Image 1 (cartoon, rainbow, N blue to C red):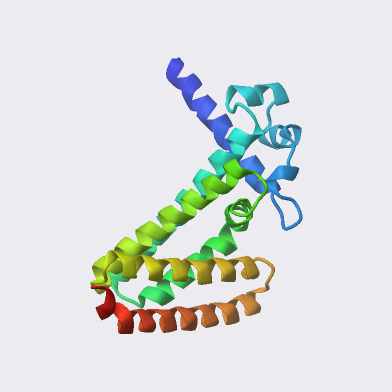
Image 2 (image 1 turned 30 degrees about the horizontal axis):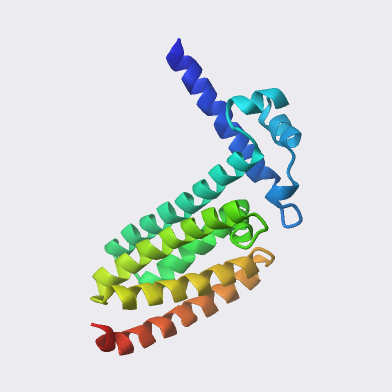
Length: 203
């Protein structure tokens, strides 16, 4: 019986997280969400919300953590696809743009909260972005035989290019996104070429 209750509690918690993500739009950020709206979409009474989260801030921080984890898991899958064969940059960019297309609100949350008004949320978003950069840097160091410093600088540059493009892509149609994707691939290739040329200075 306790196991059934635990499963139901987790399902309700998941429903609250999904409801909050569903309500995010280009015009509506997390700070504009109300507890009542989220609870209504999740199909529970507002008072039941507190069985799962202390307050809306705890829900938001959970969402930031989940957004970062989702992105890292997708990029790990991309690296597995690369092992089978294909361009590292092309597959990575395609995976990232698929993420934006399939989960725009997840990316919106990560993007907005990294420069939002809440220090706690900014710290959480920055931590998730740093996890992403750290994993990418480790991959670059191993695959390109770069020093840790060189790999981190390149990973940081790649993240900046990709996240900026992602922010722009949110408001684009399919054709515009495809053109942007081509530019991003070219930009990352140029960055990688520059990194390869500079690598001997930081060995």
